Amino acid sequence: MSGKADSWGSRVGLILAMAGNAVGLGNFLRFPVQAVQNGGGAFIIPYLICFVVMGIPLLFIEWSTGRFGGRYGNHSTPYILDTMAKGRIWKYIGVFGIFTNIAVASYYCYIESWTMSYVYHSVVGTFSSMDQAGIANFFNDYTTIGGESTTGIPFEAVVFYIVCLLLNTYILSKGLKGIEKVAKIGMPLLILFGVILAVRGLSLGTGGASEMFPDANAWDGINFLWTPQFDSLANPKVWLAAAGQIFFTLSVGMGTIHCYAAYLKSKDDVALNAVSAGFMNEFVEVVLGSLIVIPIAAGYLGLDWVLQNAGFGMAFQTMPYLFQQWGDVLSIFAGLFWFGLLFFAGITSSLAMGTPWMGFMRDEFNWSGTKGAWSFGLIALIMGLPTVFFFQEGVFDEYDYWAGTVSLVVFAFLETVLFSWIFGIKRGWAEINMGADIKVPIIFKYLILVVTPLLLGWVLFASVPDMANKIANNDTNNKEWFTDTYYAENFDEAGTKTGVVDSVATNFIKMSYLNEKKVYNKELDKLEAITFTDYKTYSFEEGQEPIVKVGQTIKANDEIAKGDFTNRVFYKTIGRLLLVGLFLFISFMVYVAFNKRRKEGRVHS
Image (cartoon, rainbow, N blue to C red):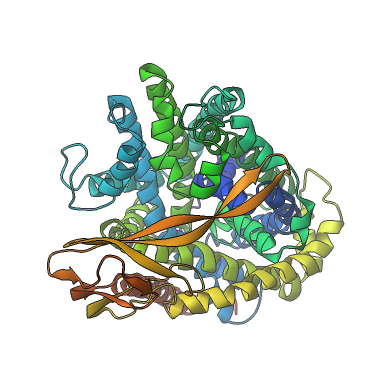
């Protein structure tokens, strides 16, 4: 039997903790990039529709499911789901709710540790003498373990990662009260820092224009994001991207919401709490998230530069350079506010990821909160170190794709089917409305029953070809783990373009090829594609030798170097095996718990 369950100290603390769980790095790093890459205003309408027809219903499902399971003394998804339906399979589907959190936390804390490091470097002035290329290279050097240290600390990235993980584990060991205290401090500071930077984004205008970027205008970035493009409603790619962003932004499909809600009392409201946490997250993402990175970057570098370079790395490879344009003193505060904001966004999310494992171990094996927290930290460290040491080799990206994307969609689809069609919408609707402080519109009953599972099923089905390509390693032409030949990668997605060798040395090859980029036509208020000469560079180590000549035409999959190669697919396969091993380990623990329950006469099904 489980020990005495933890509990929330106040409703405000619960809502802030739930909002902190949802408000994460994706609000500031992923949302603006997704919006830019999917047409700006063309993305917003599908995104907001997906929030209503998929995001809010999933919040209702997970809050009410968690409270229902908590009523029976269950505080993690394997046995929360087990209480809702007959059949042993549901407890193993619930494994996703623990697996996803440990796997995501293992690499998410690495990003979180970057924000800690960048706060330090912003305050001590590391970036003050660097140009844009220097700051971009700083990030690459930082994530190349064993390379030149930026502080003189050997393996600096590893040290910051371990410190970050230790901090998370220590706070988790204090239970819900520790999480609640961090949320009450972190969320207001996050919003304060965000508002300060958003005001700067709004007020920058053309003040950042220069000889190199004479057309730079922050308002171009804002207008691009917020000018509706109704033709996007017929573009399935934009809808898929919008639906995917909902998972990231609300932390649905992970199991953390279930766990937090499991500590509610039986008649505590879930409807208003769910909506409050959801809309607080949307305010941070849609309002603050859209007014910082894109406008400030457009204000100094121009909208066309943003369109061509929008990516996750902008936060770390571009923003410190832009802050330097504000002067020596203001740049320190800007760096502190920006990376401090990201740190609080990260830690309020990563703390939530530890609670499902802790709840499971307390419920099933009577572990204390301290023991559960430190065991979580240890597993996350074991899983996370490969993403740190082999970040450049793609292990981080494998974790993010399989644990941080695919796992969310699979679990969200299955839990929605369970709630709507097996547990039953009649019982589910009653559970949502039990103790509710608001009257939930009846339309959501039918959204949960029909629209949400269909939309989730479509997202899952549409993702199958991408999953198949990932498994087959179709993103590379170098598919062998170890080989003596290196092949040219594709110059375009289809693999039909060719390149020309521009320069060759003993340790690199530089090739030119024709590429397309998007530019914004102000007069026509639309994006246009133009052709330009792009470059692809390959770097080689000792024992690897280029075999091409300047002027040679190269096709995808042509041999370009000989020597001893350990390709990225080797490291990516290690990452996949670690994820499979983690899932099987948690499944085994659930099986052991089931046998323990059966001996104690606590088996539900």
